[in-house]
Length: 351
Image 1 (cartoon, rainbow, N blue to C red):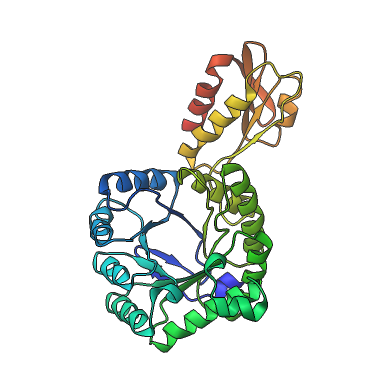
Image 2 (image 1 turned 30 degrees about the horizontal axis):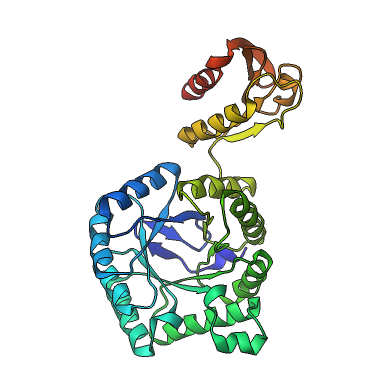
């Protein structure tokens, strides 16, 4: 497991690397200068289970807002910096728990050194980020196009630059929207990099396509023992990213706790709106992350009890009513409109 051997890095009140639990990260899409909106979104992310949040800092106003935001949230905040090294310095001074930079677009070595010196002064880790969309022209020319090898070379060059400046409080990320390129890049980088890796498929897309690409890419990378923090990048409400990330980690056996929902694909016997019911159940169970159980949502009473046998608890629809099922055994009949509330009551009182 590569992740067991990475350097331990503290990010605010969290610790990553060295075999510590893989943490879930997301990014706000509000204007960081709008403190109220950004705090509200971070609170929603916290409630969903986000453990590290990143916010863009493109202006002095955003850097100043960072200090106000941090006072009102409970998870570490990472300042995302592009182009202007002064924003990195201001973000650190205003309380950023980590900064994300690409030294290649910050400017001269002197500017990077100024950022490194400030990070060292405050003990703030630097995430060195390299993206396939901004790979240096000389590396594109060297390899003929954007390649996994080019991404890795770029990342290691940036890491060495900061190491040579006397700092090793680092996290590394290499991202691409090309899933297989991203996988290959991580396979090449992990044996050579002693620092924690933040893993994600960048610009993955909408909830539909983004989830598929992220599940495949992150699934392969994580299963190979690579990755210390993850983000599922989706176009839309970032809260959606958290449920997806949790499910990926649970499916791989990398996280315990939380309810797994299974549901049948529906058929001609289905007499209730199973699709809506299953979606409502999936949303509702996010309240019960302390439970480590399986919940089944079945469309009919014919095969429902049998199909739900491997679940701890389940509901199965009928005509105007449904069944509450525990360990494959029918407990009682329930009016259709009370199925969801009945299930919730059972979870509230679960022992």
